[in-house]
Image 1: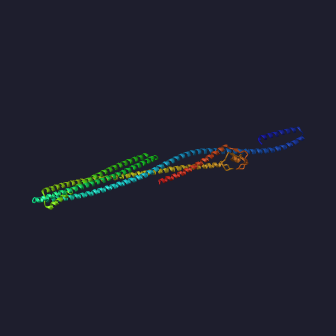
Image 2: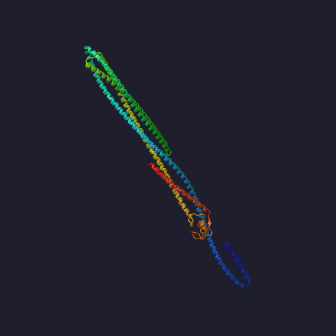
Image 3: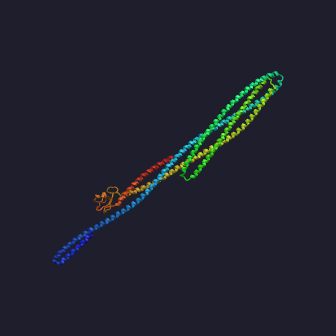
Length: 550
């Protein structure tokens, strides 16, 4: 019953009281008492009715106040949910932006990691090629050392042959002295030859036979000269083969140097790619240019040393040819001296000779002496040339040693620089991986915080009847507890407080908020899954980086 109906009832009662008073005034006094009694009874009934109405009004006021409080609570909850939804929406947008940035950074880091891995592989291949080239260079150096030892052996052989030639020269000088003594004896015998002309005629006849023998000796000498020439040709061919072998070794060394240059170019390219990440690109390129210039200077110096060695080998060939000529001349002088000695022995055996034969013997002795003098001069000249060649060879060996040491030092420095550059790349990759891991850890922590907030919000949006996320949320009146519409459809009382559910209020914004919460929850779950996958890939990349660094 409302307040208006109560007022109308009071007015009706007052009208009845007025009517009763009029009746009392009009009727008799006997009826007045009955009416007053009846009126008193009616007034008592009205008082009771008024008390009941007042109690009902008070209960209705209390219910209205409860409904007002419930509505205020629902409104506050709705405002809180709206603020939470807006905050979550902003956080979700920020998380999406961070996720986008993280994906971009991860893609960039993956691309950078792939590029760095490719560069590491290229550097490893360059290092392996460089090691192969170093081995080839060592092999070429070993061959050059063997060639140097062979040249040393040939030089020692030339020295021994020169010593033998000196011994032969000394022996020929002694024989020349003997020839002079025998020529003096022949002159004395010529003075005595005038006493026996018959013996001279016979001696002349025998001299003719000796001339025939001399012709035979000359033929033999010519044959020996031809044999010496054949031996000289063989020696020249052998020297040419040695020169060709040296040229082949030089070509192999040139190929090794070309491969080394290719390795250097590949390494320079790798270092240039690495210098894109580093800040000291100009300094590294300048250093590379200096190393290349130094290597070019070393290669030029090596070429000069090789040319000097070729000149020394050519000069050695000339010395060998001159020595062969001198030896041939010495052999001819020895043969002539042997012939003269044979003739002198024949003259001494017969004790007869003519003045013509003595003159011929003296002339032959003088010719032999001249040839011996020429041989001595040629020997001295060869000694001087040999000394000069030894000095030149020593200088060439020193230059070759210096050039080899400079090349080895440059190679060691280049290898150290390449190792340092590779280590810097590995360290930089590790730093980037650590930075990515830190960012992933921060993102995981943020995602966990948001997920905890989502779990707290899920507790607020959970229907206590079906223990699921609310669907088409409706609030009970007057208690204000919110449940699913389907859960409140057949409920007689509130499932949470057992209060009456007379007028359930459906909240449309709550359904929108629940749908947005579900979408946000799915997005966070996907983000957490992707973050876990990226963390595992980062750990795998870190393991690969540490293995490559080792």
